[in-house]
Image (cartoon, rainbow, N blue to C red):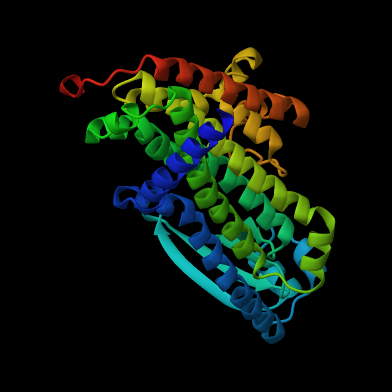
Length: 359
C-alpha cells in the first residue's frame, strides 16, 4: 500500500511541477523572487565606482578624518574653510524669505576617501552635517535583513504562495480538470500530499534561488580579507539561515493557502485577511502572535532588522518590545502550524465534491 502511495505521489509531482514551473500565468512569481536581486546587483556594480571616485576627490582635496569629526553645528563657513580647506564640490541655492528677504543655502562636499560628509550652511552658519559611511559588509547585511524580512517574506514569498498553492485545487476547479484526479482510485490524502509537495518544491526552488542570488549580489563587491573574515565568521551560518527561513516560509504560507483554496471558493478574501493579520503581527498580544507564520520566521532570521531611525520613539519601542522565541520553539511552532493546516486541508479534501455548474 505504501509503495502504491509513493508511486501515485511521484506521478502527481511529475505532472504538477511541469504545470507549475512552466505556466505562463505564473511568470510574475519569478519577478517577485528576482526583484531584490536586481537592486543588490546594481548596488554592487556602483559601490566600487563610488569609492574610487571618493578616493580621487580625497587625493585632489585632501582632508583628514579627524578634522571631519571635529566639526560642530553653528560653526561659520569661514571657520569650516579654515579647518578643512576648499570642498571638492559645492552647491548654492537662493530662496525667498520673509518680507522679501532672501536665504542662502550652501552645500559643501568633503571626503577622506572612505566617508563622505555633506555640510549644509544657511546664511553662513553650519546647520546640518550628513555623514555617508563607506560600504561595509555590516551595513549591507543590515540592508539585506531589512529587505528580506519586510519585503521578501511578507510580500514576495507570501504572494508567490498565494498564486501557486491556491491554484493547486481551486485553479483546476476553474479549468474543469480536477475530476480527472478524483476519478482515479486514489485516496484524497495522497492527492493532497502530492499537490502540496509539488507546490512546495516549486516555491522553494524559485525563492531560495532568489535568496541565494541576493546574497551573491551583496557579496560580489567585497573581496579579499573582508569577505574571507565574513565567511569564516558568521557568513556561512547566515547563508544557511536565510535559505532555511525561505524554505520554511514557502511551507508555512503554502499550507495556509492550500487549505484556503480548498475551503473558500474565492481565495482572494482569505489571502487579504491573512496579509492584514501578518502585517499587524507586531501590534497584537504575544498569545495571538503565535497564530501567525511571520512570528516564527522572523525569530529564525540571522540578522535583526531594526526599525527605521526616523520612526517616533513610542513606535520604535513597540516594534522592538517583544522578545523573539528560541530557535527550537520557533521551529516546532511553525512545523506544528503546518501540520495542523494540512490536517484541516485533508479533512476538507475527503468531502470534496465537484459541481462545475456551481463553481
